[in-house]
Image (cartoon, rainbow, N blue to C red; front, side, top):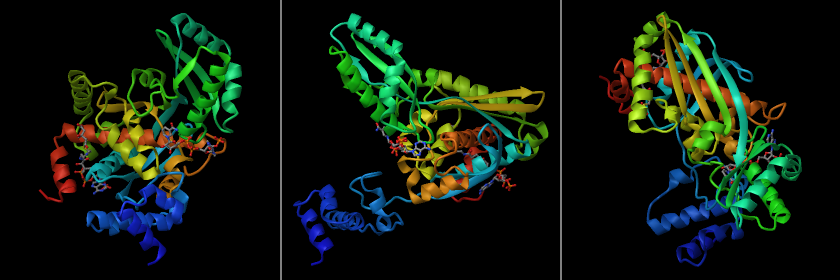
Length: 410
Ligand SMILES: CC(C)(COP(=O)([O-])OP(=O)([O-])OC[C@H]1O[C@@H](n2cnc3c(N)ncnc32)[C@H](O)[C@@H]1OP(=O)([O-])[O-])[C@@H](O)C(=O)NCCC(=O)NCCSC(=O)C[C@@](C)(O)CC(=O)[O-]
Ligand SMILES: NC(=O)C1=CN([C@@H]2O[C@H](COP(=O)(O)OP(=O)(O)OC[C@H]3O[C@@H](n4cnc5c(N)ncnc54)[C@H](OP(=O)(O)O)[C@@H]3O)[C@@H](O)[C@H]2O)C=CC1
């Protein structure tokens, strides 16, 4: 019996935990052994899951545990979209990974219309990744003194934080108090990284330092939910998280009529009554848009972003004005969390997808690639909004999805 078979046998018999296989076999052999064991246990063949170009030696201890293979998702491109931003300048093809038929066509048509109208303008209006540990005290008075000290001693705290990272720069500290508890919301410039590991490590170092400085302080959790990571929150909406980005364009009436078969007036009414009034009636929080999540999720999957952060990255607002038949449209994304280094961006297909947009790896200066990427994402979101609002205004949504979602020609 070869070594892999021997390990598979032991896993099936319950003598070895799945994750312990990594201690016996090299990463790629361990991945195969786990998959074979699961095939035996479930009686299901998993050759598709096992068929992958990923080198598990590169993944182990970095991106996933108990790995048995990979999931594959179709990848398409939309564009080019023309952008005149501070970092993204020129035409960009945007990779989108999705299983929703008509989505890429939707963004593609939106980009075509934007292209025919000139350049999308983009602006990053703030940038910073946050972590907010929660500290507990015996009394609210102690908690208040702690908050005051933290605010007055930014420079000391910055030095402690920045010892843990060469790219992370502490930008601000903001205390929030509830009774005898205090959350310190640290905000960092994280260069080209999305930055969650970076700011967590730095926040842990500062928390230990503060506990030493204030014997009455107890850090209950390094993430106290006022960060707020992978959750929507008023804090994120007002103060921002990751990058706060705006993209805008002006679409001439003839471009709308010829390519979208609708008018600025109809798109404006659809935006007001669907995105805003419908959103208000439904009690929607922070998502007065049509489908930011579609575009954000597809780009996140394609480029190795943390997909759980679609939760707050897809919050935001679509604003439309009928300007004498021409259409002004903008999207505002308060919490777009993206990186071009770190996390899943190092995986092979994800890195290639980033390279299509010229945003793979670190920028010079650091931070410039992640900001360029954020501007491209905002332009893609704008294209998706413009197109879906148009398709809804002409009642083409169902038809499009019959054709591109079910393969039925009407
Ligand atoms: C599907 C279209 C674009 C057809 O649009 P069309 O105008 O009927 O098609 P067309 O054949 O005349 O092509 C026009 C352009 O569309 C693009 N296009 C056309 N076909 C393709 C294709 N196969 N692949 C790539 N691009 C395509 C392409 O840019 C093309 O221009 P060309 O390059 O030919 O000069 C249109 O009907 C449409 O956009 N429909 C809406 C679909 C949509 O937006 N779906 C989004 C997902 S819906 C959802 O998930 C969220 C939701 C709706 O529930 C949220 C909510 O509640 O609002
Ligand atoms: N720990 C947590 O609480 C959470 C973690 N995550 C996960 O965190 C990961 C993302 O964390 P993140 O910190 O972005 O990535 P990584 O942990 O992968 O770290 C990024 C690294 O890149 C280095 N680096 C090299 N060049 C640059 C550059 N140009 N700009 C910035 N950094 C550079 C940084 O070094 P240096 O720091 O020395 O400067 C840092 O070590 C994802 O996998 C995500 O899923 C998500 C949510 C929560």
